[in-house]
Length: 226
Length: 226
DNA sequence: AACAAAAGTGTAAGTTTTACCTTTAATTAC
DNA sequence: GTAATTAAAGGTAAAACTTACACTTTTGTT
Figure (cartoon, chains in turn green, cyan, orange, brown):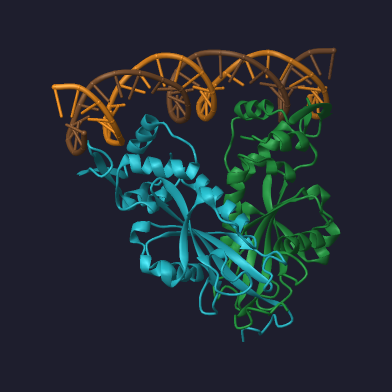
């Protein structure tokens, strides 16, 4: 049935590879896994897996992510498909690359060991195999572009955050210093950043106002820009 | 060999689908083909084909394009992979979508009949099947974004063009009127638009200056913006 | 000779972006 | 309890960029 019309055509393994971004202590990070399959068994690789017959590409990526991080609330988007002939020495595999953003605070650290995973700072990447470095670069460049016109960077932080915290997230992604007053000005012009009564004292003696992001209002208005 | 390590995993058909843009008489157009295979035999579809074992995804897209248009000089870029389970009633096919821009003047019209192809204005699209409308929308939206910071729109025109011609190309893609003086100002600020001595009398009695685009200089400087 | 049709050209107002520094509030150390 | 430390908070002026806008030129056609 699945073969009804196209039976003369070649078939290929199809996988997903997820570049998963997290953030901690001022650094943008990526989650890697030690491969548990040949070739390159034991080496670091983005989280990936083969696409099953009963799932779409997006579902496969989401499954890989939730299964191995325990996090359901995340941003996930396809980057593009990679299909060079020799990209995987273990056989011809078409890999569809995704990138994701999640809040490490929600991360179930038990799963780190269970799946043999490891967070790495993006400014200190390990040697990567296959075309994984191409995926990384594409993911970082897409992320850099996209944070200026969508609020995805907020996915790296808890629900409640201070302005300094967001600024540091932006700085870690863009890899450059931003002017504090200009940054705050733009943030505060957007109505979906809402200041609460709460004060976060963890980052300073004085304490900083805690903000939240009103996703509902954003989805009605859109027009984010930073 | 190709099966060495992953032999337990499922395999799928992998295809490419190309949204091919052309331009004529003030209209952005897309090239379609009448399908010559079930299902939907005879219906209009973007140009596509299955990926062969000896070619990369990009090569497959390029092959489909050159084979059926006779054009080698074109802009081609991947959009993304589409892999929903029921997207193709003929079987599970992962399709990698591309979009391309070419100069219709170079197009070998004999191939139109040979491959049963047809140019259609984008503002008058036919009914599309599978997820081809999703691909179309993605392609148009990517194209709209990208012409503001890269010179790909020039690929729709001959080597030599007038400022009015480019403006009309931009207008047809953006689907809005642009201010003539502002548009020309920005074009002329960029050093890789070079004015020739030649005059094009085809569009007016007075005649318009002919420009060319210096791709070499562009690739050194970059920094296109319109 | 008058007309038609597109080519070509500059400026002022508004908006956005950039650069830049002092005061405030609270904790910590003495 | 006073002084020192630390990050938070806040506004303005100059520069850059974007937008809106209308008339003259050229030449072929009638």
